[in-house]
Length: 227
Length: 325
Image (tube, rainbow over all chains, first blue to last red):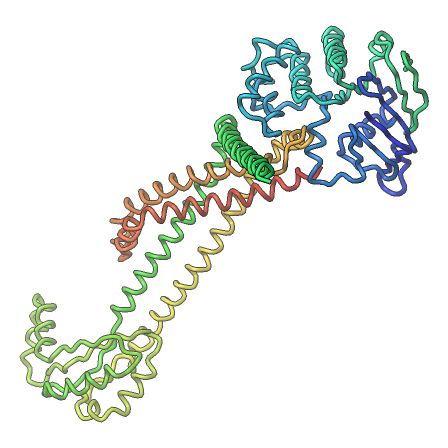
């Protein structure tokens, strides 16, 4: 599903590479946790996957799309296939819960009828029924993150990237979000999660990939993490 | 084969429907943004209204200036004096010669009797002046009043008074033509002033319009800067550039539309209420107002066009920066 082959990313010519010849293979339907201290290269790796950045060298293939041959005008199409959830939610502040989620479908050109039948199901899935008309500033952090997840999965992407989704949440809400990600993974979506939360990593017992100084230092199935 | 064409046209139909759907959504988002960002909306519309009001007033002022200038030009005439006992046929001959000159716009002849009558009327309360009329030596000359196309161009007329035989035979020996004597400088000064006013007006209009467009550009840029994260986020979840820009453009058109209507209304109100006080300064805005009312539809459309264009260009520039990822 995701293949990185000797990928290097350097910012500026004299800087130390943010990622140094990284190779990683993620199978379909896998749940992978990326861990590492700040500056280890997690964010850079995710930015490469969503094509916010281009690698300095190496090969990236996501969902069968080879990034070398990906034209700029096709980037929106790629991003519609990869759902992304951010630590700071990145919701549209002027739009309601329903509109935020529907937006992801509208940009893909889906008809109003399709949108009307899909959005309520996803709202139900993330447990936000009854909040459709609320604006983001009327919701708690946990609820906002649910909206962000709903927006990311409403197009049924094959891959969901969650970049520190619990970073701004208290433990209870963090676990709710993690359970939701597990549920989405059970439905068949590959999930890439980055987190600093040791408790979450150790209780999940999933594949853990540790980054340090731009290199992968360990890759364990049912792994654990110590800060 | 037939099946293949059907599939093609079906796909084209689907694509068209999708484009239409996207367009409708962009318009809806634009209108939503407009109504939900109350503060920004009020600020941007207000600045745009002021800009358009400046454009409107500048154009109105230019039009008024032009009418006033034209009015002054037509009022300034040059007098050529002829003998008191001149024959009508001689006057006709001189007038005919004058009319051949390119620099002459029109000619009026005031006969000695009319001049005398005018003088008597003007000085009806002045016994001394009326008495003077009865003195045999105080004879009125005939006056040929000449309006020039451009009051600064007296050269042709100069040559005429020097060389024209008909005139030289009939000229009043005691009075030089007005442009040749003391009044010459006065007439030339008026000419220069009118030219200056015309040019300064044009310069000021251009400067005003440029400055106010820059202010609108900056306001819209700030409004969009406020939403840069929103734009970047839309990009990250896979929205096309056009889909992101569309609502901003629609929003700018809405600003432009409302501002144009407000500015035209306010401008008309201002002109209308200033009409009387301006008249006391000899500035007639009647013709300008008539013109505006006659073409109100076109003017309104033009204002909407200007407002929307400034808004759309500003939006395109401002969003460009955030659409790079």
